[in-house]
Length: 188
Picture 1: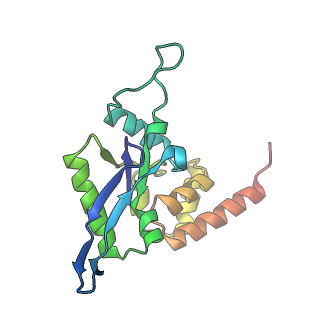
Picture 2: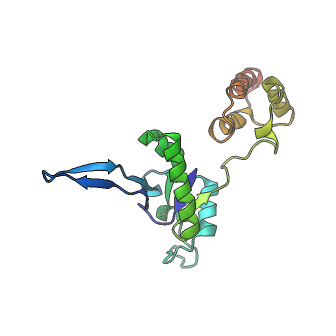
Picture 3: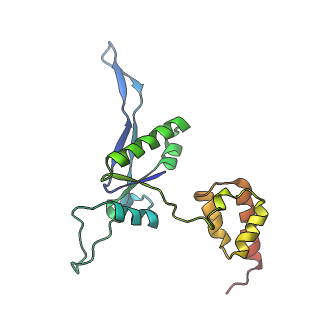
């Protein structure tokens, strides 16, 4: 799940830290905190075009600047920050339960404070056809259908790996299709 904030360096506390005082003046941490720390676009966070468009429609961007012509609004990308729960779960070593807790908390925050964060619901690349993600037939036949319908197999392969169902047999068939298509294509 990808979440966008109109504030750079935005942080959402998911779970607070709990600690207990010890008799020797030390403390024992009984619950580790979890924070969703958003990464600003200007610091290297990747922002898809569909996410930028959704953010421009969703947020009001008070104090938005203009270009020198004093009519064209400046690009809002430098004001946005991104949090990806899949990337964070891998980086932090979260189990499935922790990831669900983070995503549920972010969904609640997006409803209670829509001026701060939004959940991105759309995919940057759409499926080649509406029932693609539900396809359960032979992967080879799927590749033939995609070629006959004029789809770029490399784009479909990227979709399947990044945004689709990540089906190993479909990925394997698409990889073979991309290699075969490259071997028979005449360069222009």
